[in-house]
Amino acid sequence: GSIPIQILNGTSLYVSLDLSNNLLTGSIPPQISALITLVVLDISFNKFSGEIPSSLGQCVSLQSLDLKHNMLNGSIPQFLVNFSLLNQLDLSNNYFEGPIPIGGIFQNSSAVTLDGNTRLCSSSSYSIFGFPICPTTAFAKRKNNARLLIIVIPPVTIAILSFFFFMLTLLKGKQAHTSSCYKETMKKVSYVDILNATNWFSPVNKISSSHTGSIYIGSFLTECEVLRNTRHRNLVKAITVCSTVDLENNEFKAIVLEFMANGSLDMWVHPKLHQNSPKREYGMGYKISTGCDVYSFGVLLLEMLTGMRPTDAMFTDGISLHKFVSMMFPNNLQEVL
Image (cartoon, rainbow, N blue to C red):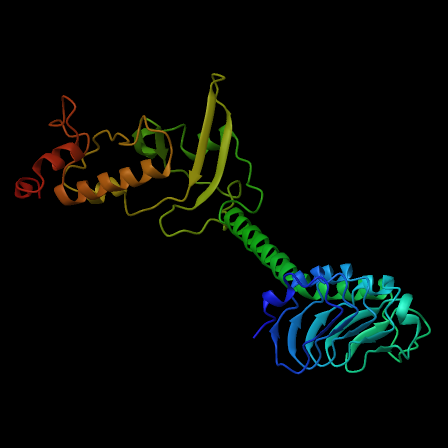
């Protein structure tokens, strides 16, 4: 067990205390400072652990201190240098570490025993105890810095590489997006070229029209070179663009697209209703957004399922195709399918 506290209470007049060879454990109690008249203290051959308490520094009358063959650790207290009466110190066979104090009893190698403490070192160039010289502060700092670098460098390197690959992926994505539009410079087409290609916007060349504009079929020789950059199965390949003014000095803009000979989407969705009737863009009035695209695609699906157009004459007084289907769902779907 540990030192009974009762031994240290009311015993300030003790001159000698010998607790050696008792297999005592635990740390040296700080209450030992009460033994201010203590001259001899022997607690050797026990199993004390921890550091020497700073309270022992109040026992300034000590002449002999024997702590050998324990499991004490930490540094040797500097206050032992100030014990002017101390003439015998045995700290052998423990786990003390760090520099050996200089001065006081430590100037007499015959009065101090430090054998068995392999982690001790001499703080001066001349070691009277035979221990190696302690590493300099600069060396220790470099050693600590090296350890710190070993700890810090791997995660920092991983973080930098991760950021680098993330930016590389992001840049590749932007480049892919750019290349999917127009990588090369588009061929310039004038308003006159458009006039000539469409035969002065002849009705014969008109394919369809809507609120957003009209679509014409035209032919170009070398003026309109087909761009090979845009690639998507759902997009008609753009040839070029034209942004200018017409003969009346009005703003004129045109996108030249590749002619698709198989007709329009509206003709395939409503083959029976397609009799050159005017077509409205169902998304007119909405801001361009992903939500608007999804909504328009949903309306297209409703057109395919019901065979009705969003602009059908039956849709009046706030009733639209999607509202009509919603009212019929789920009990009266047979009336719309």
